[in-house]
Amino acid sequence: MRDQLRPLLAAVLAMALPGLGHLILRRWGRALLWHLTIVGGTVALFALYDVSVGSTMSLTEATETAAALPTDVVLPILILYALSAVDAYLVGRADIAERRRADATAEAIRRRAASEDGETNGDRRGTNALASDATVAESDAGPAKVECPHCGKQTDADLDFCHWCTEPLPWADAE
Image: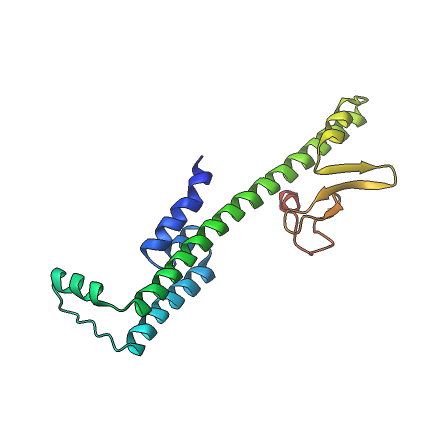
């Protein structure tokens, strides 16, 4: 449940302060990029339209100034904020999906190891459970195949890296 709320929290925080939503997701580069884009765009638009903002304004003066800002200044800034929030939400959702794929792959490897242990002891019960798993495909011609959590292509389960994208596989660190 906590993982499901993370993208939503990131989107809300991205609307509150530029880049904060991406910091929650631990995407440091994106956070810096969004922050610099929004702040830089705001400064550029204020300079372009010659809008002066005083540092010693009262609350009522600030409200009046915000209401008096031209739409040509406010609209692009709001669009940048919205794009930042949408990006934070989508990155958070992608992180959840990647984590689920990695967990499913690790579970398939555990099942494969358990079935191999069962086969060496004369117990053939693990083979049927392994064959029903969608992430592992046994073939008579070669070793078991697993889905790479990074690129999604089938790779040998015996390898410590994906031979398609050369990323290390999650179970490589466990050994």
